[in-house]
Amino acid sequence: MMRSDHQKLKSAIDDNLPIINLSSSPLERSEVARLIVKACEEYGFFKVINHGVPNHIIAKMEEVSFKFFNKPVTEKQQATPFGYGCKNIGFNGDSGEVEYLLFPTKTLSIAQAQTSNPISIDDDPTKFRSVVSSYIEAVRELACKILDLMAEGLWVHDKSAFSKLIRDVESDSVFRLNHYPPVLCSSSKNNNSINGSSSNSCKVGFGVHSDPQILTILRSNDVGGLEISPDHGVWIPVSPDPTTFFINVAAWWCKVYADEAAALAFGFGFDDDNVNVMTNGKFVSVKHRVLSNSAKSRMSVAYFGAPSLNARVTTLPELVTPTKPCLYRPFTWAEYKKTVYSLRLGDSRLEIFRK
Ligand SMILES: C=C1C[C@]23C[C@@]1(O)CC[C@H]2[C@@]12CC[C@H](O)[C@@](C)(C(=O)O1)[C@H]2[C@@H]3C(=O)O
Ligand SMILES: O=C(O)CCC(=O)C(=O)O
Ligand SMILES: [Fe+2]
Image (tube, rainbow, N blue to C red):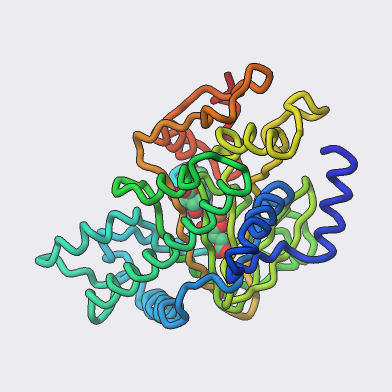
């Protein structure tokens, strides 16, 4: 990372995370778009206020999550076609002090169709589905609003170029409810602690990773634990704020769209001193993790907006010039996803797609 970038980051950290106010007037829209792009450049992570998601939808979502995680394990395991998991994350040996419900958003329509096979997820199964459907619809709108502003801030010709990927009916978006039960921090050596050392260390709820989709819309209850690492070796605790949403930008999207978009928009070249995955396009995808709380349960809800499996991800034509060629070969979301799911949480995934 260049020295000036490093300093910029440090001063921004002291001022806390970027906060984007989405209730701006039409006149302020271009300024909001600029601030979003700046936040993506410096952190790949920001929080939004005045987001427009109705409080009652958020409150109901929290209520049904709480109710679900309070059920006996055997009941939670029967929550088909929704995928319940406990401690094991993914298929390659990652684990954490977390239980979760994870499913593609399309599952809801499948569940709707399976009326003969009721889902034991709520005393009233239709309530769970309708609460989750309304929540997903609302956060998808929020994601689209943000993606449109990003396109605007990057001077991309087609302002809906990004949002239309997740509006697609075949979108491969994913929804996840996480519950981190209270776990005592250990003062002895522990295999599942942050560093495995003998210091007073907290257990890992969700290990270090970056999210693979286009954009993540994350909300939690008022219990902390989430930490982000905008700079190697630096971990910043994110104060919980249940009235807001936290936004995470994914790495592949940054590379295929934003590398050149951001470079052109901000006058940075690809031949800067440190041409690498994270800084190449000046957008970053933040590494994050969750540490368990020793006294309270953390609950989080994440919507991971993704394109359809066969969406071909290429650089937008207006952003390619003879002197700013595309650095990565085009790939489909299916190809990228397959790679991601064959790897561990913290593994790096993008080099495979370099030209
Ligand atoms: C270990 C893994 C879990 C994960 C798939 C992966 O192979 C690597 C990425 C992980 C992640 C992180 C963000 C989301 O929570 C998630 C659903 C995703 O799309 O990628 C998870 C995957 C998972 O839990 O299955
Ligand atoms: O629980 C959280 O705050 C973060 C969860 C997360 O990073 C994820 O589900 O990918
Ligand atoms: Fe994540």
